[in-house]
Image 1 (cartoon, rainbow, N blue to C red):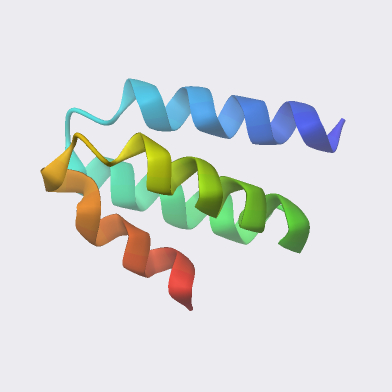
Image 2: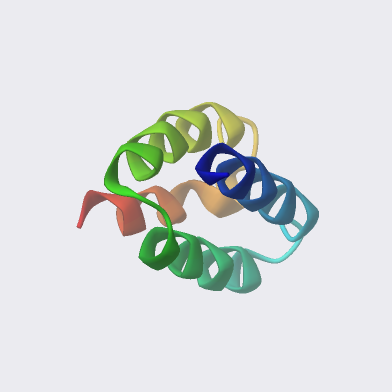
Length: 65
C-alpha cells in the first residue's frame, strides 16, 4: 500500500507541474503524508523530474528540511 501512495504522489505532481505554487503545495502535502524512506525516494525522483523545468527548481528546497 505505501508504494501505491508514492506512485500516486508522483502522478499528482506531474499533473500539477504547470503551476509552481500548486506543485509546491502538493509537494508539502506529500512530505507530510509519506514515510521517511518514501520521502527520500521522492527527493531522488524530484531531482530528475525538475531538470528541464527551471520554474520548479526552487521546490527541491522543500525536501531539504
